[in-house]
Image 1 (cartoon, rainbow, N blue to C red):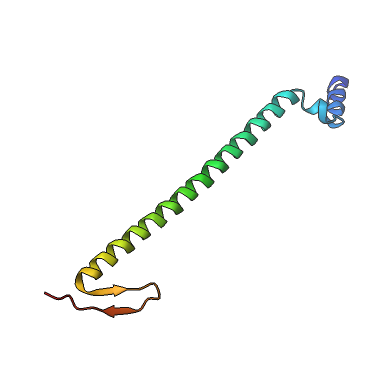
Image 2 (spheres, rainbow, N blue to C red):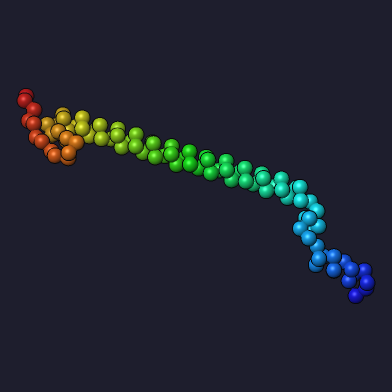
Length: 91
């Protein structure tokens, strides 16, 4: 090994943070961009989950209303306490 190689090797091993990352500004910018993207993805994920939950609630409510209408037409009425009461329809 020549003296030049030995000197380069020493510099490489003794390098500190700022010397190792000569493009520290670019690395920092990339890190900030990645953090922003993570925040945006997290926010949209939560919004999507909330949207799905709201849609499921709306669907369940509509199905329950339709089933109540059908039951009142046939003479059965479902109350909130889950009891089924029969009321015959007079024809």
